[in-house]
Length: 168
View 1 (cartoon, rainbow, N blue to C red):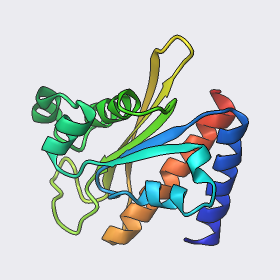
View 2: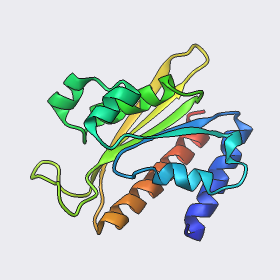
View 3: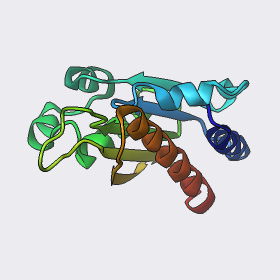
View 4: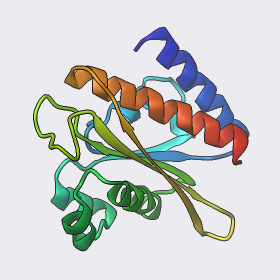
């Protein structure tokens, strides 16, 4: 783990602990990289609940409750699916905050409308009334498969930090 990623993760951990928020992940193209980064820190069990790696469409349906119709209508790489992944991760965990990532890391699999490097993020926060607030973001990253995955990790960590410092 690079020093930048480690420092950012440590900062997130302290924010999550200060706010008594547990986080979970629902990952497709990152294949568990965010959860791995979280659990690289000793003591992460105090703020990290669990990670779902849902690479296939069927696993998104089975493990996170993503609707088949959403997958058929928008495709796995869409803000709609990222949103449903994040909400499902909250539903099937003890977390208050979820991050979901679905995308095309490459080198193949892209299309004209969704080129390699297209990544969709969903962030869901459960409030005190047990209602979910959801944010979705779509980004395009350049580079190799590992570079797209690392860029996705960094974006997710930075966005969580932003949510924790501005929205909570």
